[in-house]
Length: 174
Image 1 (tube, one colour):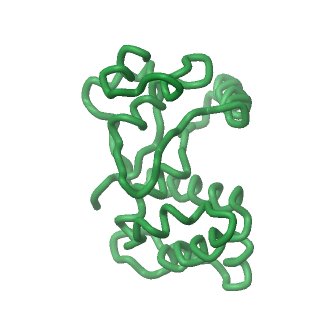
Image 2: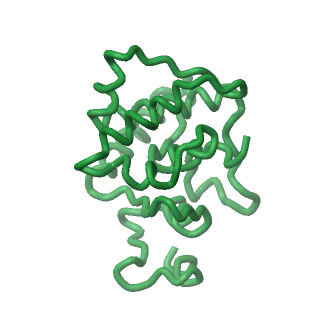
């Protein structure tokens, strides 16, 4: 991981830490570049235990298919589909105006697009979804699951080893 990161100029305090990151995290930081949002995806102390629990459950629920989703990455990829601007992407997690930007994003996602499954949220629930970032992220994760059934996800690129990890990646272009 460190050798790979060094190739892309990731050194010093930004260098990968194999005990909190996986190869997929380095892939996201180096191969998937978006000017609008900084995709510094690491498990960190908060998500690492959650991910470990999910992997534990996956071993015991053999009849289920699991997909791993990064809500931030999914939204960046879906932004082009829904005409969400770089400004809304940058500001959707802001403390001051994040809720307003999430409401805007949800309204864009509710609009009817011929090639996409329609998202329906009752107006009284729209603000509740936008007001809670955890619920908003959960909705994005659920949408990625729906998009998987509609064949709207990309395959991992050639040369990408499955042992590096796997993350659901919405198509860049429809």
